[in-house]
Picture 1: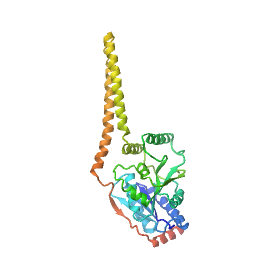
Picture 2: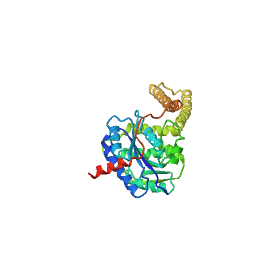
Picture 3: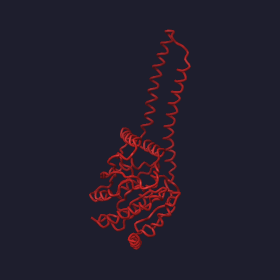
Picture 4: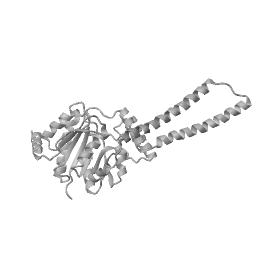
Length: 332
């Protein structure tokens, strides 16, 4: 079997603190894989700058001048992690046999990429990087993450537990991904729907190289909400169920009130009246909010706006001379 052309896609947003070390580690990895004849010499590292406000793009450009492995895309604005990742995947599939996505902080263990390639050579179209355990997470994050995966499975959404966006996809799988045209991207849910032969590669997650996470609690909650509402109408059904239960409860309480009226035991009560008003009002607002969330997603979908715009695209051709310069600079 011929060595596949591999591209490693790395979405970046304000990653100047880690970019140099990330480039070095990924470059050495590709060199080792080439030496083992596991990948083609035209394999690349593609950094996707998602509208960074620091020197991230300048560093990508500078590195591309001296390192033949490095190329990049610059988005015209911050389009979000999922859109930046998709932009890199769609561009990389034009000249690659397989593509691996990984975050710039390299908390995901890059040594498992070798296992990705071996599984690809065995016929897998998709290989998921899955964490063995979550011991490095805080108790809160570990508990909420596990609860999220269990909830998604309960409402019928097929996710790979403890898998983020560290995965290998073949060109065939990426071509199939192009057919999923929704604007509300949740790649962790979409990719298992493709259904080609897949496998898992397990690893232990490391500490971030430097800087701070780009996914604080607020973004994680928004990401989880997008995942739920993009793949399931269970929340609307849940609100409907609550509404039906409220009607049944109201009928029972109404019957109780009539009986008390007949028996002459009724007394005017301000507290019970206000509790009922707040309870029913809260249910109505909750229902309107959930329905509004879905209507908002429909609004975004029907406009069919582009998910991202590419401002700059570094030369993607193989440049052996650059690789020689990189080797010289590392020897010094």
